[in-house]
Image (cartoon, rainbow, N blue to C red; front, side, top):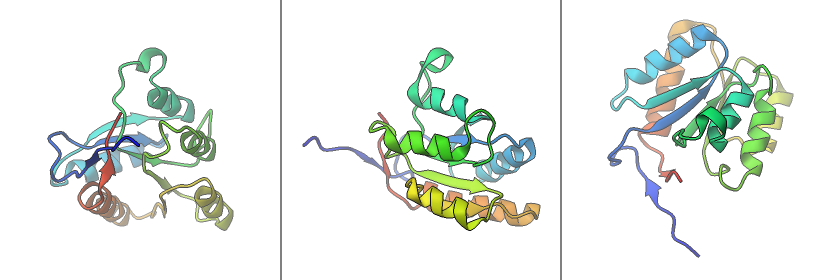
Length: 155
């Protein structure tokens, strides 16, 4: 069995790559600003629908040269393909399934939470409505996922 590399964001010689799949421009702005204020600002690619997200992940068409993300922040309420569909396709693809997927959405419905974990989401977070609380939540994502967790290497 081939030994896979592990990347620790603190010791990587490159910034962490984030794929942010979010169609709400205000949320995008808050997330990007909160992450850019971190210790090591990540590279953030933003797409607004599920089809774009999968095209980037699969590197097809205009995204043939896209960099594989280290982590995906995924909203559920997306146009074209919703977050559950995107999550299901990511976790069914052996080349993509190791990428951690953080669900970051407005829904706190039990059914959405259970479905996300059934589809192997790595965590589920509900967006606060207060901008300061929202920023604090994103900063906690940065602290945990970008500073503490050991991430698998990109392809």
